[in-house]
Length: 323
Image (tube, rainbow, N blue to C red; front, side, top):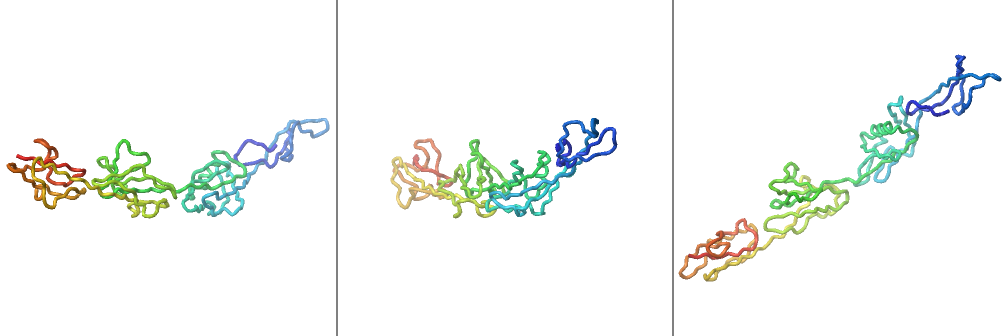
């Protein structure tokens, strides 16, 4: 006789019985099981009407801290909650019951409410959990356990002032590219100075792409002595992960086509950015009976004249042209 369809959060505390021919109500225990007509006099039976006395029921709530942090309001005490007219959940909690204190590297993900995950923050936990109880029509004692997740950080890789990442249709997933430290300018002409990935607390930042720069080859990343990520790493914070470069040396070979060998202090190699002027001594060879026209990138009458190493990379073979 305890069951009664009706308002959420209410329970029957008493049943009252009334004979249809009588205006008086008789109290019956909530545990009384009526399986037949109520007998009031020997040999007489009557049809009856039942009326339930119901009251708002209070349920207990246990708040657990879970693994990954603590919830300051949890003291092992049972708190109370009930339903206000079946339409609102009222918690009898201290003000700081949902003040979460995560362990280092963790943050609050939400609360597990009787096995159901509810995503929320400190600020909206009570409201969101109350809505969950109403939606799921949960009654009875409940356990609320804090759920924690590892923090995630943006980690910036800086290719340097002259360096860049090639950004095309083959760019790796999970990598965002920018051309300024404020994350406002994105890819320009298929190139970007910065690459950004998201890394969990204490994780290893594994960037699946290497940068390029004219005249140098990529060597490694400078992590500043902190290989594991415990906070955001960015140029705005002054702690971006920066590229190490190895400067390339390029050879210079001179094909004189019958001219006299060069003499004096002439270069047989160069580095990117180093300017060697091939139009002045000691880079002007001689050949008896001929005038030197200059150095070219091909032998014969065709080819492009090379006057210096400005802006060039790669090994050079220079061909003397004569007239």
